[in-house]
Image (cartoon, rainbow over all chains, first blue to last red):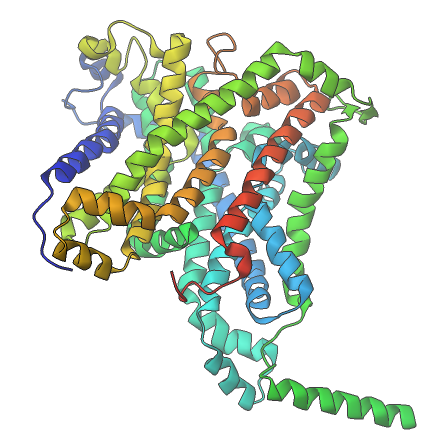
Length: 273
Length: 311
């Protein structure tokens, strides 16, 4: 907390990194509001001369709206599943001392390290056998399952900070587990709940591998797949492509704007001690 | 008659015992069941299945056939496979070497409480929000030799097509990985740096230590555990890089950036050799699991401590 001399070197470094982060984002946005001709003539680093939203409108007319809707459906369902199953799980991990619970917690911790690629072949097998191939449900289930470990870790950390006195107070009132959960644990872990909601939403929104392997037709395509195909098909229409990239990030940026603190604190907790 | 009485007595006794020890609010295992069942079904079972499938031959249609060690012996003879392992390791190590110093410096810097630092950290965070797909598409476009930045900045890029040569393509993959994931590691270090007790710095100042000495003698040693956690996350992330390779290089030029995760995808979903794909996937799991066991041990997560106690 003591006053220090300003560290100019660090200041310079931080500005340099701002350039590394900011310059590509600038090109992204500025290219997306130029016409193809303008962009072709003046290149990525120039200032946009004539502002146009044409690229965005074009994207929507080429099916991007459908991808957008699919992504929304996947995201909402994944968040709903996470919010239903993770809180009771974390509550159990925090409050019950059994050997089984410890084993379950270890299982989820190990799950943190299972990369989606590792299970993608059997997932394809399971989803196909279940008749869910090329169906959004087939994308939603594995996506939700794979955001469980991180969500459980975050929420468990939050619930652990509820002091034992509060449980004892409820115990004196003779409350059942369900009442303790509903009236004490859930309200006090509201911050953690929004963190896992935001986190799993982000995962679902940006998911790529599961949709890539588990869907096929245009009607089940999500945004990330749309971007991927768009790039291979219309590689030359750079402004249109970049407008699609911008579209894919708008909802995420909005969430970030409103839930920054929640998200950042949740992720900070992951690094731990 | 006697049995019911004794049962009631046992139940009553258990209830008072529970109350004495504050047992209320200790839910049974049933509470954890939905999440656990779900996770087992979609992560653990497939993980076991991948082991089984690695000993079969399956083309995606019909049923897998047992094939013994076929996939494994073929993989050990496959130069592309061996090269892909080497490339995965190379890209991962380069990623750790680039990202670690960067994120420590940025994280420690961002841990200060000035307003401008808070604002800049918020901006630094943005790349992490983008999907790997969006990031890869963006960089692929930026680096396009004809329509991208290289066409405008010949002084920096020459007329080289970065993605057209191996060193360039690997450099791009490492750079793009760093661009996207440095924010996450910066955040981890920022949190850890804030947790370092100020007393240490005050003592150092009294002893006349400058900023640089404070950094090397207090900050870095105090961040040791965080460094381990962060580096292990980088290793797991690096070994499983996939989207970036698929979009930026398609494993090319030739097989110059065909890393294991991408080779697995190619084998399974392009050549429809799901057995071989499973074998590669299993290799990835083994490596990732070993690393994760280390994480759990080192970081003390498994001791189930509260994050408010101690540092």
